[in-house]
Length: 178
Length: 129
Image (cartoon, rainbow over all chains, first blue to last red; front, side):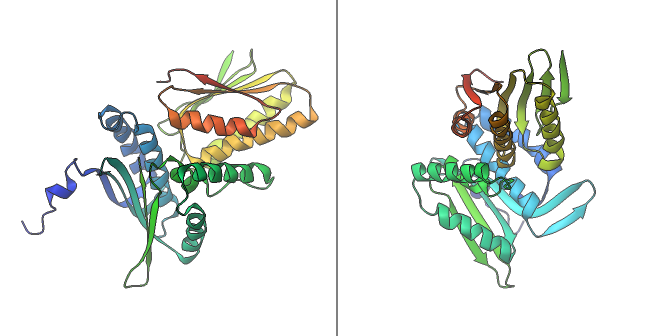
């Protein structure tokens, strides 16, 4: 067989889960509970599984709700992206990638410029500030809390990248670690 | 008598109201695919229940996970309760349950507690399955 994926890259020592494709709410329904159960049962993740699961769901829902490459399906929605849970030098890395439109890139850049390379304590303060802004603004229905929450949970500063493809499309990559 | 307002699913919580103790109970997970469609009717019903009388009202949360969208819903519950307490002299309490192993839910409870002044917020450690 030509071009077989190297087992080294997809074995559980490296990769616990990886999903690429059009993610729907039903797909997330189907995989979320099972993933949580496995993470809760594994010695390496049984103390941290709740945070991993929380970040995983938040990133998966961002793809389902906002990824611009979409397919119209009845009674559900589908956005194209990838989401992985990986072993990374003693941490568990949760990574997501999806295409973004210019206005989405601008919105994300504002968020991540704020988050930047702040320390965990500073991120905690930033998150509370965002919560207060949501609380104090009588017209606010919230918004943008998701990445601040992910940044707060992450054991290392979250990393992100905007990758411009040859066809001009832009892909957003983001990783958090637990 | 306890009325079930919403039955639990894999991604939405069980919500019930105990009329004897004026207690709204929310338990399970909350990450609905359509935040507004799930939570707006609940929020409307909570408003009606709060306005039904001035007896002490209790929110009990036993959430094992809730997404950032649900965070906004909870913030709005607190906001609405605080606003009501400016006008009416009554007691509104929030009981926030968290498993001792669940640092995430404990931390979120502490955040909500910081938003409360007139609302009484209690953190309760309890094993949650």
